[in-house]
Length: 249
Image (cartoon, rainbow, N blue to C red):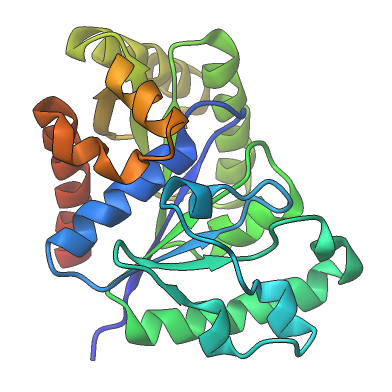
């Protein structure tokens, strides 16, 4: 039996819509008939449960502390199975070594039982971000058209390539004004990576900025976004198909 693919979503800074991207790609994969799990690794600031209107009953930390079973921490929502590592600052009570060993076991279980495992990484480069990079088959960099977004992701890539020269990244542009604007943002990033790191990070797709997105997220209706806007649904359909294609390749 082929094991599931692990793919992560990272950014250099917060507020770029990484959790929004992760959530809606996972929803599309489930709609296409794939067993999909998502791990919210934004320690202390997890919000994926909010985006799909779920209450976090148990976390990975609860499992570590023997207050829940592995089955308990897998919230089998209609959209996808969600695992939250820590939804407050309880992770500070365990060492990174214990946490990462536990997460290794979680990954092993999910790979055997799901077609796709998506990991929502915290912004920046905390220790868990490097664990995420290590366990992922490839990672997706979420960027917006802001100098700090592009430069922060560049620094992350520089560090990773110094450690693993052939690491597989893809670029996803979020909050673009239109398709041309998104491609221009990718072109800026590609030029930076090509010139200074001598690397080529493929363009994976983009999601344009629309008022309906902010309105639905504000009213806790993120899961309706791909149902009410044809353009956004098409963009997430493209992104999910890219992930499926990479899995087949």
